[in-house]
Length: 479
Image (cartoon, rainbow, N blue to C red; front, side, top):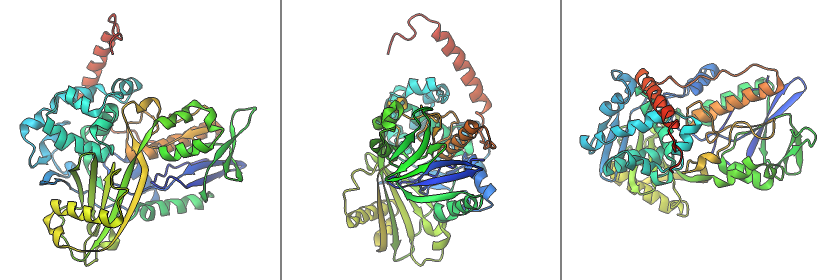
């Protein structure tokens, strides 16, 4: 049986080759490492994997805060601990906005029409994708302050770009999955150490015990094609050729672009050439060791308003990571998304800037000194769901019958996002390989939780109205 797993990372240049063995069959999957992040309530497939591995890598559910240069802006509770209300009432009522007025928040209600109208179908993506998220919020009457202090910050840390650079379709999909579909969906746990150590090491150990081999530091440069059948029969890694019965690409956009640029065989296929029309976003990660303990009210925090096009988060690793619980000083991590303007700076300049930002959030940071730090720059590392990207995002199958795709930028209809989508598309790719060979057991994929009954009914009625509109003359005449 072939089992393939998607493993994501910012390490886009070097890839791993995963080798699965069943009898005489050999299959290779391009893999890359995963960089740590939160694990949200809807990540049912990832949580099921962790249970299957018999490990307990996560913290308890955590509350989060949101800061601006003016100080504390938003406090989010643990939503599943609150009385359950029909969506979106729980999110609206239980989220504590410190500065955003009720009048501003009420201007979000008309947006619920777009939330209902967008159902993750191909038609919905094509309807909303070429609009920017900012245009969408303006169209539905959101106040300027609601957009600036609520929706745009969500986009900066959820889609890693400001609203004017985000597809409206992606914005609706992301907001619904993480925030609006069900009250507990915004609840999050964190890994109690690095994801590599806590999750992937035991996972890889089990994979290897089942007879699979990881060939590391293999830079994929081309695929070898059987001219008679049109199938791929090998993977070229520079001068080395590795035979393969099937290939699953699980690299990000930048990694895929680099492979295509070196691969004559992929350059013959339109769907791979079209990846050049997609973009990726710069990320900056900073870890700092301070000379004293700073009281950080909540372990996970999001920030906005410090730079117009950049969102960032910071984490109290003394609270989240087992290895730092006994540290005398605070250990924290700050991650910056859409960090284009930060990457050219020196490490010292970055540390000074980050420390200044932290002091605006929590003044106690002002008196602390940085004992040590690590700065890591990830150029073009995460998917940019830009307006108009949908036409160029790849599907799970390709024009090669035995080449498949997985990743958070691959189009599917599951409805998940981020790490969960990356893993789900990996399972879908595994199932396609099983179906291609006609042997093995299909991986179980847990669907997203069903829409709440009132949302289902509203979507049913909206679908009826759309069907009637399709029958009107000139229904598709206007832009």
